[in-house]
Image (cartoon, rainbow over all chains, first blue to last red; front, side):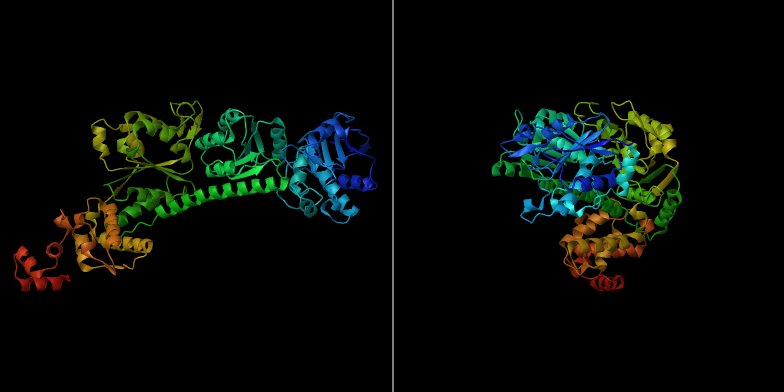
Length: 179
Length: 446
């Protein structure tokens, strides 16, 4: 079932590497991918006590911009995201649901005091987008280290894991009728 | 899809929601509870692999909930969550058995590692229990030491019946090793990869035996707070060893007969029929035929269980086994106690052979163990054996030669006289020279 995927760069214009991102996501999800504008009011999602943006609020606002009921929407933000119990999240998705959001804030090498590296940023963003989309297609974390659905809570783990689905996750996706 | 389960207990909806999402993405089945009471209720739907518990909640606080959860599931893996980093409460929580303690907001990496470690620890604990059971199973399936023709015959019967699924009744006096025979049957059967579940009907009050055998549903009776599987259900695929079957009540006899006929039963207080494919091995020291005659044991059950009969002879009827068994136990306890005892002194041999052993192999093992505790080696001495063994007398002289009896008697008298030959000779009413000759002939020492 070719579900339409809407890609929204929430807090600004699409970066120069958006085509690379779309191509990377399409390698795993060969669905039609459309970029759309999703003017989410990010300041409304900012929590001063945490100095971060609430991922669930961003996602809820993003979902209001989903053009079609059967489609998925994936938002990409540059701000730092959190959920109440965790210090931060790279992204947030609704398991088997319509939406997901990914933050590039902690995917940038500069965040860790290293020189900027666009290639690394693009690679990490592709992996995170595929990972969160995987959740929205119903996939859970995978034990296989090289699978993109392997859980990672540090950027090093994001770098280590692969960008594609392992055979098991691919077959689960196929079983759900999404592949 | 995994079957790992987690219970999240936190009064903040946003925390519950985000943790629920996080763990669902991790493949967990998630249950949430907004306070202590809801957590206790959720425990009824347990068990959970992990319980994440907020420390500060209105009403029952996390420490109180933790205590209650532990009562319900002593093996629960609890991780304490709190917004307040307090060493005192952390220490208290850990003392109460919490796996660990984290402060909100939690670093995702820390939470991942914590959960992974908790799951690993739980898996190791479960594996440990399984391995202990296996070791216990292997240990208890000790090869049966048999030199005598009578025991060789018993072992032949074991080999014959093991391959079938027939019910077996193992009979014999207390301490003859009936359970060992049952385990040997199980170990040599096609069911050996499934459990052997033992129930001693004689040691369980009648009111509890029914629940022990058939299990019960929650609320089946006062105090039945949780569903429990019975031994019959646990023996599925394997063997149910029912010891002291002659002691079960008429009511349980009827229930047991029904299960043996259909291999189906229901838990106490339940409606659902459960099937269990088990093989029954019973044991008793009672005369079942006599109990049937006296109408204390159902005839139909008797015929159902008594398909194959194995009689384990008492130790006094197979004296050839006494010394090999004693040496086996010496080796066992020498290893366990780290003692250099390796042999049996001739006087001790005489005592062991002369005693009647009313408690059979169990009594022999206890006597050897006791002697090993007090003895210093290198051989097990007569003086180290329990007084009861020294004072005992074989009551079946037909099975013994006069020489053996004389040897035993002299050894006992000599021991009572603390090795004083003159006094012993007076007691025996023989002269000293005769006694010396007999000591030499029998290899006895003062």
